[in-house]
Length: 336
Picture 1: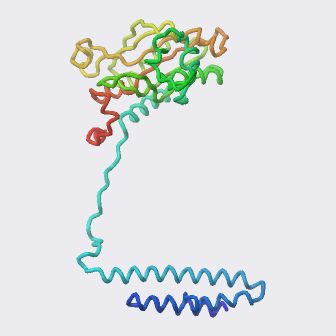
Picture 2: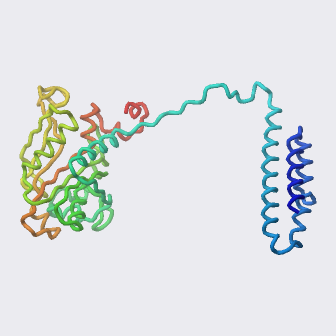
Picture 3: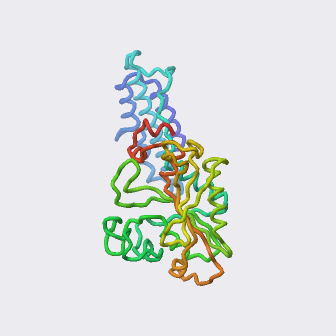
C-alpha cells in the first residue's frame, strides 16, 4: 500500500502542476480527494490491513491527503493571479510602505532615567498597588484624621478604608513591614488627587518616592544623595537649595530647589526671576513612622524624599503645560 500511496501522490502533484484553469484543477481535486476519489479508496482499505501496519499507513495517507489539499489551494491562487490584468498585479520592484515609528513617552523616559540614576547609587526599584488602605496612605505616615489631605474633596475614596493612593509613600510602609534594615529603595508609580486640571495640575500624575534606612543615616547623607542625583539628571553645574518645610512623615523636613536649568540661576521667566526651581520634598523619617511599622531599634535612622515626575520632565524637556503629556497628540509625542 505504501508504494500505491507514493504513486498516487506523485501522479496527483503532476496533474495539479499541469492544471491551467479552475475547472481542470477542480477535476483533479475530485479525482484524488473526492468522496469516491483515489485517496478515499485507499483509506477505506486500511481497516482490513494487519494491526501492526494500520497506524503507519493511516498516518502516511493523512499526510498525503493534507499535502494535496495545500497544493491545490496554492495552485488555485496562482490561477486567479494569472487572470488579473498585468497593470493590477503587485509590482514587487516598488518600494515598501513606510510605517510610523513609535517613541518613548516623555514621562516614561523621565521615570526610567530617574530610576536608573538611583539604581546606580544602590537603590532597588519597588512598586506597590494603586488602590490603598487609609491606614497605609495616611495613618502609618503620621497624617492625622483632621489633616486636610484626608478630606473627601482632596482624596479619591472608593469605599470605607479604601482609596486611590495620593502619593507613593504607602509603599514605604508596606516595604518596612516585610524587610529589615539596611535597605534603600525608590518607588515609581501613578498617584491620584482630585485637582482641577490646568497647565500645572492633573488628577493623575506620577511620583518617585525614595527611602533609605540603615545605622547612622543623617541629613548629610540625604543631601549627598540628592546632590548626586541632581547633577546626574541636570548636569554637573547644577546647585541644590534646601528650605525648611513641614511634612507629617519626616522631621526635620525640607523643600529642595534646583538652580534654574534655563538661566543657570541668574533669573528668568521660567523661574519667576528667582533663579531656583522646586523639584522635590525630603527629610528624615519621623519616629512615628518607625513606630507604625514596629521598627523600634533606635540605632536605625533614615531619610525619605519624593518628587513629581511630570515636574522633572517639564523642566528637563522645556514643556510648559502638563496636559500635553496626556492628550496623545502625535505632533507632541514624536518630538521624543
